[in-house]
Image (tube, rainbow, N blue to C red; front, side):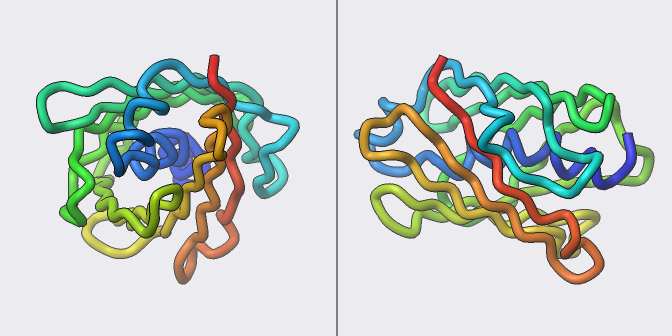
Amino acid sequence: MNLAKTLYALSVAVAASAALGSAHAQDALIGSWVLDPAKTAAPPGASPTSGTLEITKAGDKYSSVSEVAAGGTTGRSEITYAVDGKDYAVTVMPAQPGVSLTQAIERVSETVYKSSVKLNGQPLATALTEISGDGSTLTQTTTGIGQFAALSSTVVFRRK
């Protein structure tokens, strides 16, 4: 899986991670989600065609596990994190030699969260995640930074 596809696989995990904040939003998001490819927009050849997302809580930390198919390749992302602005390691499979991904999540408002994604310690992308008022839709807009600007996307999930 090349770096562009890795970013889109990571987008699934980032969407889940960034969306947790208040107790109400947390309760609404824990569970299973399915990618809505018709509402998802990404660069040609890299747009996800299917995906699943599972959000769970263990103690004071959250976990998201996702699988997404993009450009004919399936990737899996896993992360355990807190919404505290600190970097947490992201595991992406298949693994990318020499690639270390981290993300930090901060709450912007009751329904909006910001994630900062780093590749080998350098900024890769930011993601803004918005939760719909009824809790049925999660929309994440990822903006690539610098040489990754062309990888910007919007990913939409529906509750399963």
